[in-house]
Structures are given as C-alpha cells and as structure tokens.
Image (cartoon, rainbow, N blue to C red; front, side):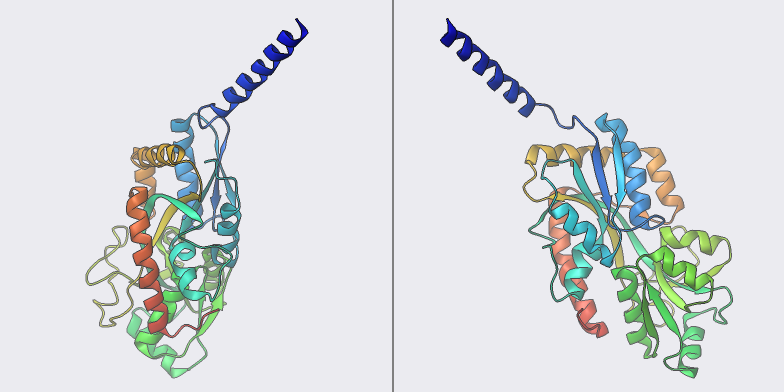
Amino acid sequence: MRRAMVAALALVAVLAIGGVGRAEWPDKPVKFVSAFGPGTATDTVARLLAQEMAVLLKQPVVVENKAGANGIIAAEAVKNAAPDGYTVLITTSTTHAGNPAMYKSLPYDPVKDFMPLGQLTSSLAILLVSAKTPANTPQELVALAKKQPGKLTFGSGNGSSRISGEMFKSATGIDILHVPYRSAPQALADLLAGQIDLMFIDAIAGMAAIKSGQARALGVTGAGGESLRALPDVKTFDEQGIPGVVLTAWNAAYVPSGTPQAIVDKLAAAMRRATEQPRYQEVLASLGAASKVTTPAELAVFQVAEIEKWRKAVREAGIPLE
C-alpha cells in the first residue's frame, strides 16, 4: 500500500511538471528591451509596438530602456537573456549592421547570438542645423565650414548619425569635429542650444524640432530623388549636387539565439499583425518613418547584406575602428 501511494505521488509530480512545461506561451509579461533611450526612434517604435502586441498576446508587454555604447549594452543583455521568448530586443541598424563595421570587437555576434523576428521600419537620416545657423542649403553650410576649418562640430547619437556625418564630411572635403552622445535626443538638445553646429538624425527624433522651427532640415540621405513623405520639400544630397551621402536606417526585432522556433513564429506573426493596426501606422507616418515589415528569413538575408554595406561605408568615409 505504501509503495503504491509513493508511486502515485511521484506520478502526480511528473504530470504537474509536464503541465508547467506545456503551458502555452506567453503565460506572463513579455519584455521589450529598447537599445536606445526615451525620445529616440527605437524607443518610440518599441512603445507603439508594445501597446498593440499586448492586445494580441493577451499579456502585458513592458518596455525597458538600456541605452548606451551605441546599443551594445542592450544587445549584450538580450544575448545573455533566457531564450524563452519573454525578452525581445527592439533595435536598429546600429547594433546589427553599424557596430560590426565600426568596432574592432563586440561582446556579441549580431548574427550568431540572435534570431530575427523581422524588420519594422525604414527611414532616412536628416541633416539638421539650428535655426540660428546662417546656412539654408548644404552648399552654404559647406562654405561656412571651409571658412573656419576644424571649428564646426557635428553630433551623433547612434551609428547611422555618425556614419552619415562622416559621409558628408568626406563627400564635401570639409574639416568638422565629431562629438559623440549617448542618444540622438541629447545631441539634438545641444544643437538647439548652440553647443554643436549640425547633426544627422532620424525623422522620428528630429521631426518636432523641424516642425516647431527650432531647426532646419538641409537634406536627407536618400538615393537619387528618394525623399521622406513627412518632408517632401527636403531634397536628397544627390539632388543637391553632393553625391555619396546615402544611408538608410532601420528598426528591427530579435530574440536570443536558441529560442524555440514555435515561439519565434508566434512572436513574428503577432508583430506583423501589430504593425498592420491603423493607430500604429498613423503615428509612425506622422513621425516621418515608413513601416517596413519583413519575415524572420527576410531580415536574416537583409542583415548580412547590410553589414557589408555599412563596412563599405565606414571604409570609404575613413572612419577609424574603435
């Protein structure tokens, strides 16, 4: 009798453990780790997406900012997180294409350490100057810089803003000083305060300053006649006679390598449905970013090509590896 009771209790324990293991994902809140701070394009996309995903997944989706070191802090944190689908990296081309091109070594492998969920947005960088700066065109800014070599400063808060600035510097032959910041909003605040002279910034982070008249947009990093729908009158550098300043920034989502494929598929599907919601589309469009959603497989192929593209851009702009 005692042996039978022990066996029955053991069976109940095994079944209980099995039941927990078979709990349908998600059965607790999901965390989005934003690779950049509040006010950035990445943070804005993460929070918009979190609101829609929470409804679809029927679980809270919280956003945690881990800004710093060009997104390296966030990428490393997600790389080391449990591969269970409850930690998602919402990031940019900086961490998964730019950093491999700009750093001699990284504490993460952007391909091997992550599983892609899909691309989320595509955007061009905008050249901004303060409303107080006496330049209304890129040519006028170049002339101003050539009058005082080494005096003008450009700020950057991520990889795309740094590389865009170096591209502009290389394409025009001007001598301007790079000033790094932890995030684009910090660099923008100093631009508006007159602490730096120019910067390249994504549309989401820079749109408010442009619309308020505090800053002027002198050009966008599109190819040919490609422009931003929110700023149709701002021409590309190609159109303004300055070829070679072409760069597209993007947001994307990843989970740690080893996450079960079934969870990856469910997360990716929910993400695509979330980006189709009218409110998400409307807010994103109003901020100047284009919604561009891809499958995990499409992002994997795209990312490898982007790493090579950014490496080429870094070499041609003469940016020393850090």
